[in-house]
Length: 99
Image (tube, rainbow, N blue to C red; front, side, top):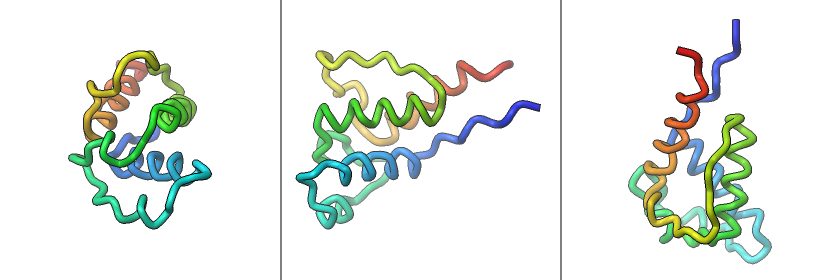
């Protein structure tokens, strides 16, 4: 029996975003906690910068054993919300699952 892949949820993505942001030396934890986090939260409006996003990508790839095709020269505008990001992770995780 193979172990189940971790389920991707908006809560997980939010947790990872907060963790990455709080690990940055110049972030205000109170400001991060004050953000109204949810599926419709616009990633760009949270203060996530490109370095944070790359760190998030690494953490997600490691957690779910997937590879995310990320080009730092491309805007993250295609993934506008936390829900968009969670949806993309779900798709990649589903692709690696046996049918």
